[in-house]
Length: 117
Image (cartoon, rainbow, N blue to C red; front, side):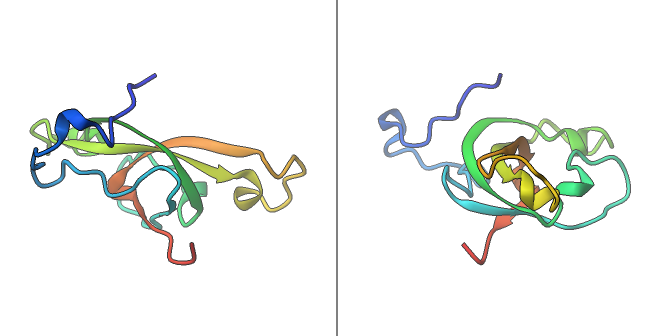
């Protein structure tokens, strides 16, 4: 399991982060998985695109493996977020409990703020 990224840590007070170093989303925030269909291999399942979930936690930034797979990355890292998506939002006929969620880690570039939250 990846290490959790410190969000409010006094060791970082006064430090100005570089562009792209500050996470866009925070735990508890509602996010929507972007609905786009680029060519190639991307690590966001089709059935999650357009779905809304809640950020559970930030994950240690990792090398952008989508770009790395095409040889277009020089070690640039992106923020990962573990999000929880209600199972009934993914599968309308889901007969399980309302508290059942699918948990998945998604790159920041595939998320946007949910406007209805």
